[in-house]
Figure (tube, rainbow, N blue to C red):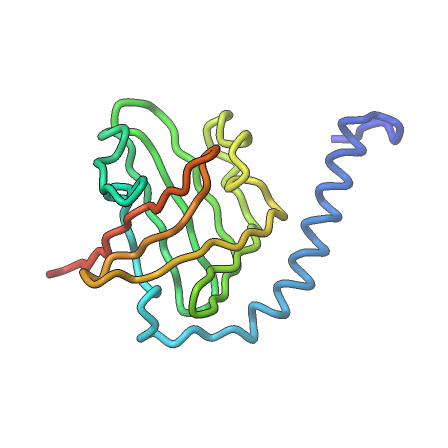
Length: 164
């Protein structure tokens, strides 16, 4: 569909398209060089189980909320969530790499079928880069650190072992 050159919405779409192409070219080359060891503890599928606030582990605030975090050996991650009592989902892919303490991600694709409110979430915006502190605890769970307002929160993720 053709849109007028001076149309603000057309300009925004063109700018976003160029931004995505630039990120894909730059990060795509970088991501092709990333091969994550399949034995790396982060590789696999994780499901959100609980969170830790002020050293106290608490259950998910919404038991209907299902969040999955996948880390693949090709340097790509997927974040996907939905609520069992609502229609729709939020889904995105990012390039990732890690240090001993941080997960670095660059979002390169957001599902066009996402719920409309997903666009408000920074984790669902193409081009967003993030650095998330993480660690694997003594039980083998993934802990990712986020700041919610003034609180320091650790999300607790459990690794899924399919077929067991």
